[in-house]
Length: 258
Image (cartoon, rainbow, N blue to C red; front, side, top):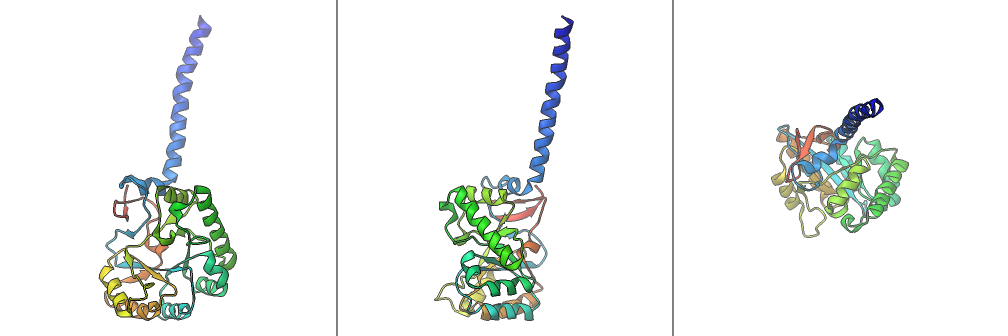
């Protein structure tokens, strides 16, 4: 009888203690895994970061690189002349063809993000295929430039919950844009591209360009002059976004708090 009472007492103490420890453990795990919880918390679905909610007049200029490099040296020269750092999202397709330019981008102090190995529609891939695309891309970026990427932009801006979940699980942040220059379109003039970007920019904007758009290098100098005149500072994406204590709202705006 005494033995049974002792066992009941021990059970009454140990089981609640076990649940407490498990709760504490998983609570810490979730607290450490801020990005995924934040991305789904206020929107009902997983979203990449389209822009940042801030009163500071800062914007991020980003350039996707998959095909071509004819205009890229002039683009880099323009950024250097204005002492501006930007973010370049590179694919393996581009890295394998232009490794010296990739090294030049890194040496100039620009941020490098992942843009996949082969530029597929990520929402059509299995999780294993996504992981292979990201890891292969990451390895080649680091092998050529020495840069360890922390950001990823889905090709074509194509994503779903599985894409964002996989990207976050691998330790990257998924980045979209809120201002699309459409600089890849053949029927867009330099003036139209410039006006489109100027009209869309606001504090916290992430602007999408391409490294080899026909008029991108021409537009960039004018845009940087405009930003300076309007009191804006152009920074890399990684410098614009919040690293912790944030959530992403239904429109993809990254905001402070939870």
